[in-house]
Image 1 (cartoon, one colour):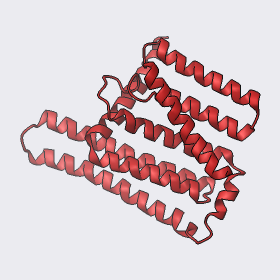
Image 2 (tube, rainbow, N blue to C red; image 1 turned 180 degrees about the vertical axis):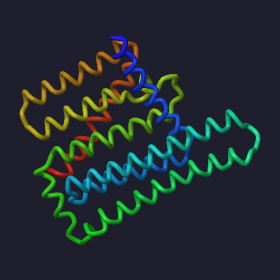
Image 3 (cartoon, one colour; image 1 turned 180 degrees about the horizontal axis):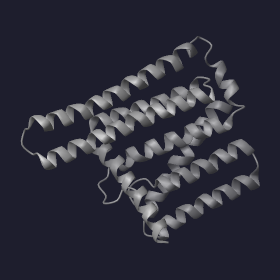
Length: 234
């Protein structure tokens, strides 16, 4: 139980770090916006599994570098509030790591997306109908990105526990909606939404989220999945 609690605390602290960087660092907000754009582009273009993996790795690389940069800046400001040449070197080096990660993402994006641009790229949408798992992953990525952006607008003590919206509820209802579109089976869809509802209920009963935060998360998850699947299957 103790190790399980420590693991949960680690996830909560990590989520707090992401949201803090989103709320305080303009570059992080830019990175998240570009990540959302890249995920949308991945949906529109017919990417292979390897290409999609490269996009996800590049997004993670950039965001991780920006998080390290934010951490370095905070530590340097704490240790050396006055100007010092070594403090400047530490900050400049951390910023260089972010720049390198961003350049890597641009290079990956160039090679992945350039060959996909043609007047008939919408034909790829027809092929995506045969790969609903692909669309589900895109929906989950967008749901979490929008959820973290929403949390960054609210000052709460623990961003993984509390805040608008509930990301747990958003992910659960996003998956339930995806199951409905993939299976078109009433019973499977009903069970999926019941499980999602139980996830939402546990967040409220545990005092982690308010009812409004859970409802907002549920609406977010359903909306993102429904829009993406409707675009593909429409």
